[in-house]
Amino acid sequence: MEKINVAHLVKSEDLNHHGTLFAGRMAEWFVEACFICAAKVTEKPQNVVCVNIHGLTFTQPGNKGDIINMETSVAKAGRTSFTVYGKITKNNSERIVSDGFVTFVFVDENGKTTPHNITMDEAKSSEEIAIRERAKNLR
Ligand SMILES: CC(C)(COP(=O)(O)OP(=O)(O)OC[C@H]1O[C@@H](n2cnc3c(N)ncnc32)[C@H](O)[C@@H]1OP(=O)(O)O)[C@@H](O)C(=O)NCCC(=O)NCCS
Image (tube, rainbow, N blue to C red; front, side, top):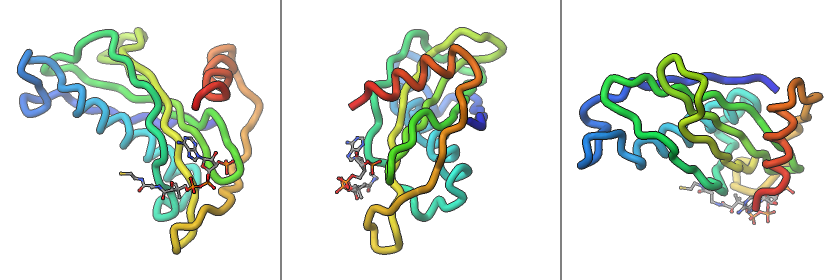
């Protein structure tokens, strides 16, 4: 599936009382990046609502001046719901700082669930196969 990239610069106002990136800010950026992917894939952002933010584990702190990179793609498509995977790295490193999934539901103008018609393509790498497997086992 298409990969959508979003980046953020960590600034003073993004820091917590330890002087590192505040988890709430990272979570906000993460959900926003996944939503941008959802909006692009459906081409109807007005019909997309978020129903579940699955676990987001932080393995490294972010520091002032870091560039936080978020790469997102659809990992699972149901009938009305679909799940976006997001991978977070920083600066020029490939090392994963955090990753997780956000599930969205497609709704009509009355907020009633309706099919999104997203079709999954063939997974192109072992990484993509593993991510799709993780998405299948979420709840
Ligand atoms: C999204 C919403 C319309 C779904 O309503 P619902 O009555 O749960 O709908 P359904 O039970 O028919 O489920 C619809 C789909 O969502 C999936 N789903 C429901 N709850 C889920 C959850 N917690 N996690 C993952 N998927 C979920 C269902 O499996 C189903 O998927 P499918 O159609 O692909 O098989 C409703 O929960 C809602 O309006 N939530 C608030 C959304 C919102 O305001 N988000 C912003 C929060 S600040």
